[in-house]
Amino acid sequence: MLKGEIEGVASFYKYQTKNGVFWRFVIDNGKDPITGKRKQTSRQGFKTKREAQEMAYELEKEIKGKGSIFQGDDKSFYDFCNMWLDIYQNQRAVKPGTIRIRKNEINNWQHYFRHISIEDITLKMFQDAINDMKKRFSESTLEGIYITGKMIFEKAVELEVIKEDPTRYSYFPRYTKTVEEIENEEKLPNYMEKNELSNFLKTCKDHGLLHDYEIFLTLAYTGLRLGELCALKTTDVFEEEGTYFLKISKTLYNPKNIIKDYKLVTTKNKTSRRTIDIAPVVYDALQNVISYNEQLKEATGEDYHDEDFIFVNSNKYPGYPHYIKFVQHRMNRILRIANMNPHLSPHAFRHTHTSLLAEAGVELERIMKRLGHANDEITKRIYLHITKPVREKDAERFSQLMDQVINIET
Image 1 (cartoon, one colour):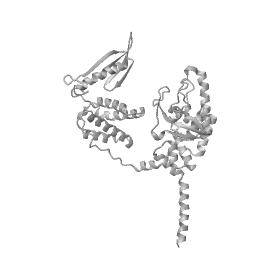
Image 2 (spheres, rainbow, N blue to C red):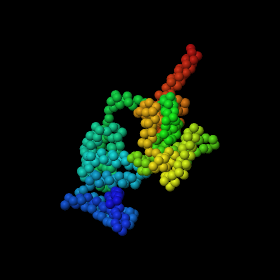
Image 3 (cartoon, one colour):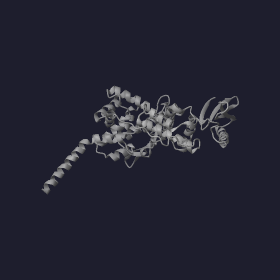
Image 4 (spheres, helix red, strand yellow):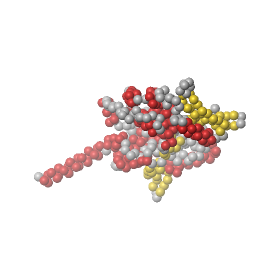
């Protein structure tokens, strides 16, 4: 067997014979109510996966016509979760990262219900499970698990696998924040002061490896998310009537940090899709990288992964985009050389960009639009912190004005 993957209730496999590669599938029909053994239907000898899928679809319809995909008394939570995930992926335009999160959330439910028939799960069992998970997970993580659990049972009712939704009257457990948690919420995230940023970029220029300076200069001047930076292509940088622009419309998805195993997906949300103006120094830096890539492409020929990326590997896999962990490693090296805070991450450039824009007098709404934020508490917190002296002066000026008004009245 060369490869297997699950689609719905059928599993599809490639297999090799002396006559070539063929496809087969196996449909799991659940347990036989008499013998207790699992019942499976399989077919093989298909030249293409499409042919196998079509036959599997017909057989699945036949099984459904007999009453249910699940045979006998076996309607296991585990099997239905696999089916639900497949439906969830196909009915929505879901990003790979979201699917990964949903799988993790399902795994947490499997810890409690994996071998239980979905029909036997009660409101008490569901509520006890979510209450127990509260001991291990943060509020935001548990909320995702809770929502996924409810979606699974709602779909089971819709498909008539169960008659009633046991989660209907469930509740999300309340979290009581500690003093420490409240104080941490008020803390500012890590970002660089102007002198620290200057030191970092100077160290990049003096001691950086290939294109370190261009990478971190771009982050500092744009506040891009790291996935957005890694996904940049040459066509995203352009000039119109003497002004330089950068188009942000995609992000790099590579959770395993395997250089060839990447995907380009749309940005975090609609607000994240944006075009921002950039300084000439950034435009020139990006053009220098693009020119270098042209030379690299010419030198490596067909080995070059010619997908137009800007920040690329130049060694074993020329042309492939840098992955996020690579940039983090490069940053860690510069931080060590510069003797700076080792806990700073590439995301700190985003917060640094916010602080510098605020200090320059840019309004909060415009800062959030530039960063691709619809609403972000951290950005607001940084903005209010940086502009506090200015706002205090505003209050003082207003007070002086009102003193004049009062004096006029008297």
